[in-house]
Image (cartoon, rainbow, N blue to C red; front, side, top):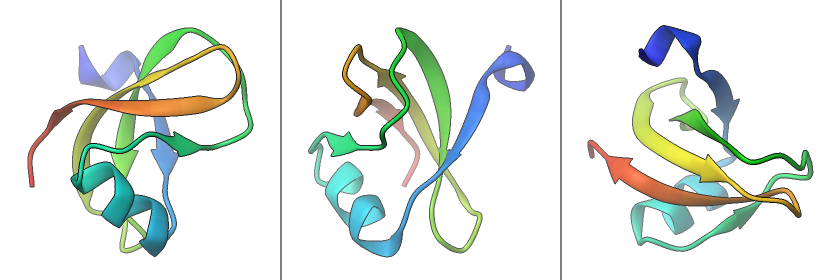
Amino acid sequence: MLLNLEGVYLSETQSVDIKFGREVQIGKPGLFKVQLFDDKKQFLGIGQRQEKGIIAPKRLFV
């Protein structure tokens, strides 16, 4: 299932925000789940991309 999800690579600041449960602005709009990676390319978890290019954390493994 995870192989079918798009990967999104976050900056260091965005990674910290996601780890604290905050939404981050990415820019690409769409309504679907994505894999989240930090700036060191380590898997963080699953996020939900929303209409205005915002990603909200759904299930984190950090």
